[in-house]
Figure 1 (cartoon, one colour):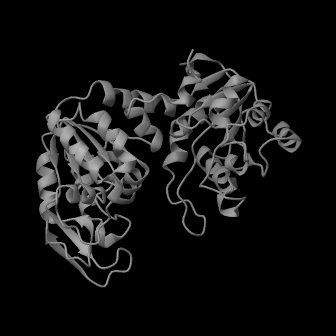
Figure 2 (cartoon, helix red, strand yellow; figure 1 turned 45 degrees about the vertical axis):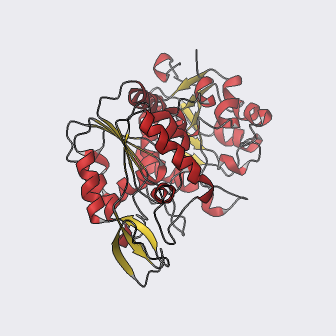
Figure 3 (cartoon, rainbow, N blue to C red; figure 1 turned 90 degrees about the vertical axis):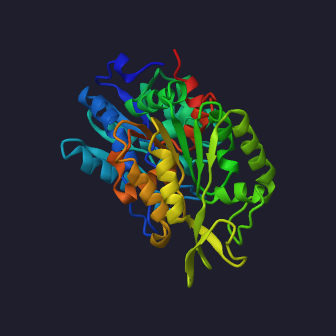
Length: 393
């Protein structure tokens, strides 16, 4: 794979596919800058060579051209981070004569950010004509958006058909860290698996069961496993059509000698978002009219004991509805544990996982926090990512 280290970009225009798909509040304010900051080393490297940069990113899941998903706010923040010596402008267009005209007005060592690439219907369709039009804006292409590399989108896999293409620093870092996790995990290797649904984690679980020493399951998905084992779970989230899948995973864990650890108590409530009643109950005693929304204190203690001897830990998914302060204790205490395990290799993966870590202020507790989301899971599962294949020598 060709790296930006392998090329000199002086006085050229470089298309840079970044992932600045940051979380926003209801007013459209940026609530986490992690993905913007992750792109800064690549941007600074290119700018130091007096390249002119055209930034391409998506933001949110727009259905039309909603103002909340416009990229102007991203360009403004990038400019603030890079400093007043770097000219950063935004355009309300994606391709065409107006973009070319605005690009001519940007000096080398400056940046033009295109409008949200997903405002163009050709992006998610992998439209070759959109890729061609984008390529006409620059001389070379840099992909620094690992999180998009599992997508066969025009700005990810199409542009390399027309321009010399290179990997940015963040993309390289993701590959290096996840390859280490995949190929050389030191034992004991433990997966702390949370999140809502078994279905979204099925590939990951199957891929890792031959490598793991322990599989610790919390979050909403634990209830599907517990129901598969015959426990009553009240109104808790259960994927009824995945109960047989959960049974299969438990059987596969036995065959691979992987210890499976499940919760022994729960925080339960009558309503996940506007609770009028909460309690802590042991496994098997969840009332029929209540739902589990977090692991209980005995489970936290159990999970801490099971995690503490680990040499390698993959954190994937929260233990409860961490966005609600009353239901975040399980997630918060287990993620805090990472800060005490000084000799373990600790990788966090998944958008909710990264958001919870940042919310709690625990970023420095982890060896690496992947920005990849679905791409991270696909890579760990051993899938070939089309966005990476296009960068191969």
